Image (cartoon, rainbow, N blue to C red; front, top):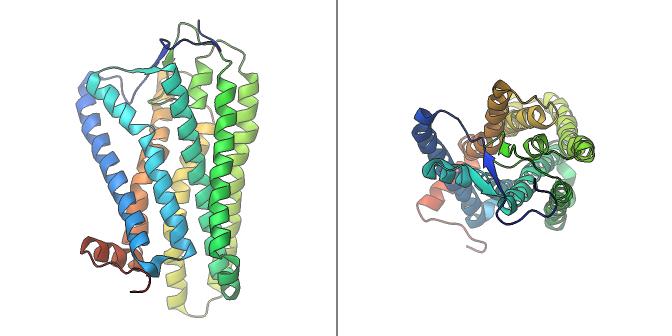
Length: 316
């Protein structure tokens, strides 16, 4: 048994992406490609926005912050999973598990808060256009992103510190491909009622409050768009918001399934939980660059100029 005084030699075993040996090579290549595309795509968005002064607006400031968070978010889980597949080892140290948990929660919650912030930005832009410049000033945007980082670190530290006192007995196989709260509580032989209550109320608040704010923002946005007399204007507004809604639906749908609808410990539920985790940890960060660039003329133009070496810095 290992408790709050775990030694450096204590290790967990990760269930991984699949238990079938014949699938390991395919999964390694698939997730390696997805990871490289995710990092490259999101990095291109950050560079394109930073290099083009025409994109130095609140919407793209939040988008570049989301891309940075996505790179860090997917980098907390996928590289370790790839190493485990390649080395045919599923082990992760106790300290490494807690570190992965902390950074996973930090960057995952950051994605949630940034999606809510982006929804608010679109609400102000469409419903209060005359006040947009005043409300979404650079100072306020910087404060909002800084507040998001502070809140996510506070939430992550709270959950991580509550894991420290738990003891883990002989069954040390984490039913996932990374260290997460639910799987760690499942394999603990300590009383996890406090952890479960904190996850339910604090985790529920972190997920549901931004989700509800996004829904309210988009109800107001759709109502405002429907009052636009020009059909072309309505189409442009719907196109701008449609990509954001696609990310929100995919991300929040799988996150709510994973955290607010916990499953049992059967093998089928482990497979379902792993599939849901892959959707919000790998697939959503992968899709973001395509959704925000291919459906956005300004982003496509900035990416083309970046790749051709024609940047537009301030004052040029």
